[in-house]
Figure 1 (tube, helix red, strand yellow):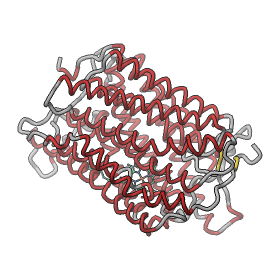
Figure 2 (cartoon, protein in one colour; figure 1 turned 180 degrees about the horizontal axis):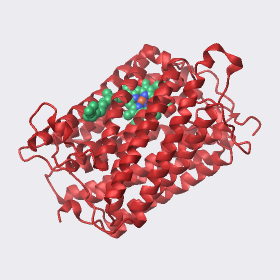
Figure 3 (cartoon, helix red, strand yellow; figure 1 turned 120 degrees about the vertical axis):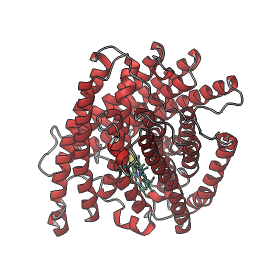
Length: 551
Ligand code: HAS
């Protein structure tokens, strides 16, 4: 039995699995809301019991975009840290605290939304106001995630003390980068929630500075999407090579890509606010340039993954130009699901580049094109990779096996997801180009001519949404099987080794003071003057608006 196959201690696996339970409950609830949304928008279905469209839209966005992702990521990252640098009893206790604080926050926010007191969507844009319990709930989730971050920092610190002069394991290094980025970024949204939203929703402040609140949200909102992406990259760089029988392409390149993501993913939030008045266009342009910098590490990742595939195939003796490609393990769902995620990131990333291009953003902003973009990136690239991780992580933690039958079901699930998402996301992109708005209930807009061209795409979205919901039910079924019913056995925790002739990673890659220093300097450069401007020149703040009206 290799170290990769050593079973994780029960007390650790219980912790990691608790995060997975919340993930898959969220998938079911959030996915059902997604299905309902697409049905309503097709114009052929009305919600029963007076349920409001924007309530289910908020549940969908918050549960899938914020809860599912955060729980999966933190649980997965704890497992990576436990496996590579270990977890002490004290750290485990604090990790449980993180879990429960996040659960309490999630339950508070979820109840508030479900009773219709927080139909403010996942971006909770002011001046829409939610019940204070919603903001307190969000604050708890963030604080819980900070506790998790500090446990991770401590885990690496303790390991480093015991392994003086050694470079940290690659996966632990990547987790620390992700949690550093998350911590620095979530300070923005936490300050908006604590300083602006909570006093305003409690009635202590009459008005809110709308532009400031949105700026603080997007200071957090863009790194948020990388917080989702980086765990997928962890799997692509360091786990997939092992699954396909290969080795790490380059440890140093992977570390450098993660460092660049830390540096450039935060000072770019204005690319979500390009049409927002009140921000100097020069600063918007500067942040657009920085956005193009953050594309580079993704291109490095694409290069590195291709190279891993080719190198592995050639080492196995497939010499022709693309012979190695045919021999990839297409029948292994642990590879297939993330692979389709990678392929989806090619149009998903290209769409992101369109969004970030200052002039083209004017065409697609606030259209359903953007929804199509993030269903390719977040809901395909990231989620299919998370599913791919689930197929080995969950049986590894529960001491069961991914049987050939479950593997086959996983492959069917992957294809269902791919078909559903291709139909839904493509029609969203096209409808967006035709001017179809996002975040909106079904409407014929008094019979406008252009609106008539949208309807068939909205029907396609409902078809795609229905197929996706079937995929969700199948995935939850597989999860339950892997957790409770699959035969007992040992499933590998696949971590790729460096190749034998790998060069040592340069020491400066682990100079945390340097990277945190540059990150802060870039943030100060990109945000100090515009935020000062916003504070100085903002129009009067806004009184709250409640939805549904008269709530
Ligand atoms: Fe985005 C809006 C720009 C990436 C998610 N984005 C959103 C929103 C979400 C989101 C949720 O500039 C909506 C927020 C809201 O509610 O308003 N996005 C970008 C850019 C990138 C990008 C430049 N986004 C993501 C990722 C997300 C995500 C990743 C989630 C995980 N996005 C924007 C902009 C907006 C926006 C604007 C605002 C729009 C507006 O006006 O509202 C880049 O990071 C993309 C770089 C990626 C690449 C692709 C590299 C390809 C790889 C795959 C290799 C494949 C292999 C397999 C090896 C350059 C790594 C190949 C094998 C074969 C056989 C082919």
